[in-house]
Image (cartoon, rainbow, N blue to C red; front, side, top):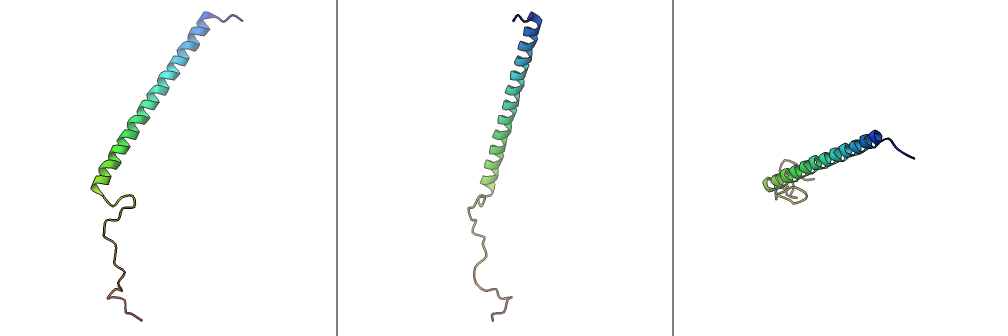
Length: 70
């Protein structure tokens, strides 16, 4: 089957635009991921108790003086 040259050119141009749009989307997603990782890394440096690492500020298990013992 013979295809019209203008149709082939239009299809090729459409595909090229799709590939460029996909590449732009991937680039933007990678930039967002890197920014998120950097932000989390900065936050982890500021807050060492993040993600299950205790900071040593837990209350003791001793009975409180405000609560009378029974």
